[in-house]
Structures are given as C-alpha cells and as structure tokens.
Picture 1 (cartoon, rainbow, N blue to C red):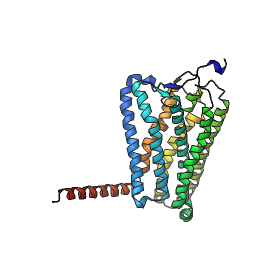
Picture 2: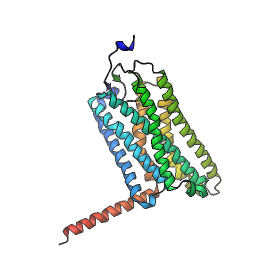
Picture 3: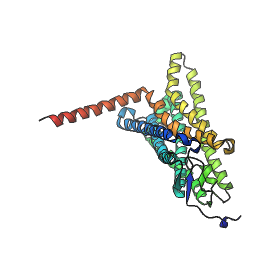
Picture 4: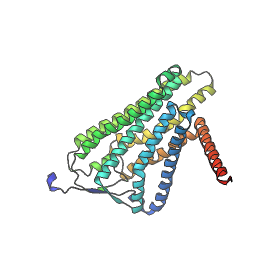
Length: 322
C-alpha cells in the first residue's frame, strides 16, 4: 500500500509499564523517590564543586559536567515516565516525542564522551604524573568539556533530521515508557533503511570507540599500578579510579544490550528493564560511587555545610540583636 493511503499521526500513545499495571502506584512512589535522589545528589555535587575552590580541578570539572548531564537526562525522561505510569499510559505530541528522543540521544552521547575523558584524566594522573599539569590544565579541561557537549548535540542532530524526514502513519502506540529510537521507527510507513544504518553507525561508533578508549586507558593504568612495589600503594592508587570503572561497567553494559545488540534479541519487557538501568539506576548510583567515597569531596561538603551554618547563625543573631 502506498504512503499516501495512510493518515498522518500527530500524537502517540506511550504504554509505559503495562505488564506491571497492578503495581503502578507503588512504582510511581518508588521512581519519584529515585528521581528526587538523583536530582538532589547531582545538584549537591554541582553546588559543592562550584563553590569550593579546593575542588576546582580537571577531575571535578568532569564530575560536575557529568552530574549536569545526569540531571538533564533524567529530567527529560522521568517526569513524563511518572505521568505515563500514573495514568497507565498517556498520549504525547509527536514533536515532543522526537524532542525527547533527540535530548536522550545527545545527553547519552555526552556521557559516553565524558566517561572517556575521565578515564584519560585518570590515565594522565597515574601513568604520566609529570605531564598531568601541563596537559590537563583547568582552561583546557573547560574547553574540552564544552567541545564534548557541542559535538554530541551536533552529531545527534543528523539523526534527528533524518528521522523527521520520515512519514509517520501509525500505529500510534509505542510500547515503551519513553520515545526511544526503535519504537519510533515502528510508527513510520517510509523506508527506514538509511536512518537505521546511520543510527547504527553513529551509536556503535560512539559506544564502541569510547568503551575501547576506556579499556585501553585502564590497561595502561593497571600496568602502571602493578609496577608499584607496595600492596598498600597499589590499592590506594587503584581506589582513585575504581568508582569510575564501576560506573563505566554498569553504563556500557546496558548500552551494549539495548543499542548494539539487535533489538529482536529481547522481549519488550526485557528491553524496558535494561533501559531502566541506564536511565534511572546508573544516574542514581553515580553520586554515591563518585562522591561519597571521595575524601576530598566529603571535606568540601563539610566546608559548605559549615559555611551555611555560620551564615544561618549570623542571620539569627542579627535578627534577635536589639
């Protein structure tokens, strides 16, 4: 049947977690609490790093940028997901659906680039300590972070343009809790071969290149660590990058499962569960594994709380002083 015989659609229906309909109230409260933890934890990281001069270093700039991307990423997805979950499905404008897809892809690519940059930062600090200050200066780090954000959003815009050229004729149902790439393509009555190839090349390149880069840097890091004579020194050095390695393994593991392995390999339920890991679970654990185990950051939090307490105490004294 020709495309002209189809009616164009302007909105779609997100089914959400339809297979868990009986538990949707519990899930709504659960994911609302997780969202609050994600936003609060990452905003705390951003505020502490920006306010404490002792944390103005390349490593913490990358961490601050990662936290900003996590807040934007989850805010793009979870509030609408909570609405879909509460209503047991909800309609969304097709334009808003494509915008959500674009932001999700752009921010996901940004995080991949940031993970790779953070691994390079750890590599220089451990394997090339004499060159660290000259290579990873604060000014260079700021320019690099800006370049990574721009590169991710510009690259993803190519995919967005190709997707918007498609004719969307239905069905209007997306069996997911957000507008992901594969469910959106199922709405199209156009030939999607070109956009599928372009997207596969883009996502595979971003995920594989950054992942292999991280693996390569950590091989060099481990070789350097093994040369340290004392076991205490080896463990202390490895602990400085163990948090980053744990986050990388969780994040890339789910990305490979969802975007590199063919989508027909999993059922809809499994795909949704895997997507929840990198869209909800990983952003929640990042503030914990990166910050709460970091002595410098905990010291920065204590200084911030001390300053807030002093300001509050001074305000109260000024208020009650006759």
